[in-house]
Length: 403
Ligand SMILES: Cc1ncc(COP(=O)(O)O)c(C=O)c1O
Image (cartoon, rainbow, N blue to C red; front, side, top):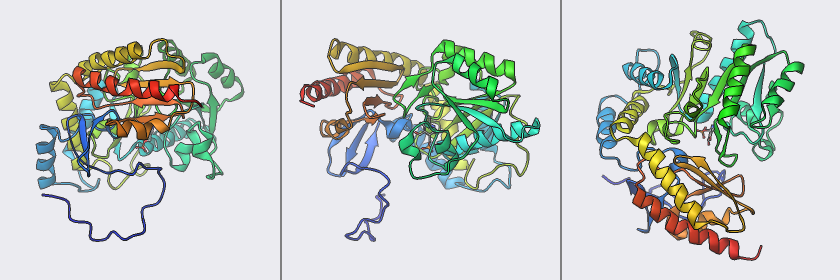
């Protein structure tokens, strides 16, 4: 069945202009390919910004969601929701954590984590708790999460910001130790394992281990925002697992529902008991449709070996880019892990978004000069080769232009 013909559209746009959009609309997709309403086909290197884990119209996911929609979409958290238990148990098994709270998006997961950290402090008698956050971080666009975000553009116009954050540079453990001396009220450290919007910038393995050690020594919560880098994208279920550490709190969202809106906060023993009845909640969070999407996404990822695929195809994609761009002046760095890759150019390159679309490739540009590839985790090596074949000439042509 097709969507109803647009009965309400007038000449004037009524959707608020919160995004600079390309003048095109997608109509449908299959696997790692999408088509626009004019019939043009694109290779999807964006996955709806690291969301469509299983690509589009996945033959196992679609019937499962249809089944769930025919049974129960939403019922509220006044009742037990068995699918919540099922998804929580699986996520805990994969992460080594013990409990989950479900919500609907990345910022909501982070908002819950920030509230939890504050209450963790209050429960210890700290009335004005502080949370360590990072330069170039991105945690969302609610007032609290944009205050935690380290980007002046995201914050501009929305003051007064929420207080209680202290900021450090990434990958500098001494900066946290120094900060700790003057800030006895710190209760948590909150960071992305790979900064996504900040330009695909990874925390190093050594740094993650150091921060874990500092948090243990000082009784702080280690809270890892894996909203973008988690859910198998780097080749492990969660990006911090490359460092062999376990956080106390981990917000998730994006890829967890393979396109169905969902968020989750996973907690370990230090944090799991902080919220009690009445401390936090959401109408939609944990609804059966989103939970089924999460359960099925994880099941299909396991059945189809998508962690291994993300690692192998990600490495092939990166190799192809490195070979195609080797020695090119104007390419500053290619970095990332698995199917989360950033190509940093020496100059702003947001123009590449539209040019890539013209050439049949979806991608994004973050932090002004970083081309970001976060394709579905089902990407094949052949599709990775096609991606390289489209993208490398685009970058070379762009860099050949006078500035
Ligand atoms: C690391 C990280 N945290 C939080 C968010 C916010 O997620 P949402 O847009 O679902 O609110 C994002 C979104 O890009 C993100 O990359």
